[in-house]
Length: 251
Image (tube, rainbow, N blue to C red):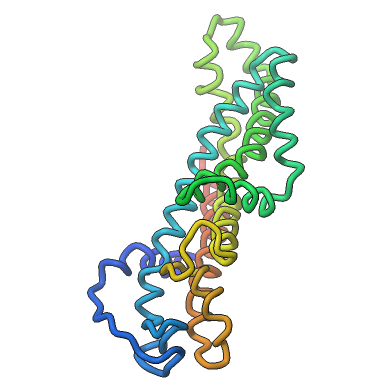
């Protein structure tokens, strides 16, 4: 069931734009076609097929970029002298003090169009850097690391060979939640009209623009909302299942 929850929105998001569909316009919120029409008289089912790829790809790239940059930042801070560690981490603490959605809206107002993914990556950066730093400090204090240093192992081998592997499971657990958070931030920004045109074929934009006709054609709101919910729930359940299987796997 968990895989079905994840597979359905992913298939719709990536295969939907490839499905040939006859585009036609009708009256707003009319009972025409599979799911009726939206506020602009466009076919809702066609908009659902078109509206997921940008959301999913942006969330994936923003999360991956945040882990790449935040991981390097956290590892560098954990292995740096105390003063440099403080200099690297204190600006991130200031960013963490600002609510994520507020930070996204403020930066989006100053950033050029199309920078939504970069902004979401910036929002996640402080949390990931602090998490990686904390995990690296804990793993670096183990006797195995001290033994590797005494054997003359280099920084790269210790960090990549032992420290990174030690915190892989923690980061994998966080990644599932973080990706869901990226979906939430991008959907919320799109819902508020930040970073996307008001008539864009985006699931979150569809929810916002069609809510005025909820009682005329509820599918214009329910269909994209269901895709977002299925994607978020299915992703979390799948990551949890994979981690549970890895924990019980024979070593």
